Length: 177
Image (cartoon, rainbow, N blue to C red):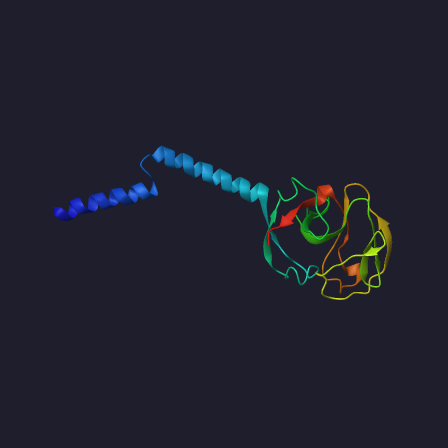
């Protein structure tokens, strides 16, 4: 008889920890947590997988990261920021994101000479570029709401590297790490 009575209080304690004293209130809490995590995962944090070498050595190939969609709610992207860019939604893969670095801001003129980036005729200090390049490209004037983005691995040929103008609407957010 004693063993049965000792087991009952223990079962009540486990039930109270797992479910709580009020089952309905616990169910409401679970629904709220699930909804909050869904909103966080769907609307705020977007998972990305780095596929390619254009951002070496900053981001390794096949690395995983999260993009914070709220990063540019209160301010615009700045020079040097790494951003996630959504390609044109009419292309084959509308959910494909690129990670690129912002080097040109709206209204500026961007050019490449002897492997160096120039903004409005002045050489840009880029300590994150570790691999030399020999790029040369004519000056390009950015319009309002346009940013010039390029990867950190400039050792690739100009034609093989994804770079260019991204509109503010294409910039999804900023990687967390």
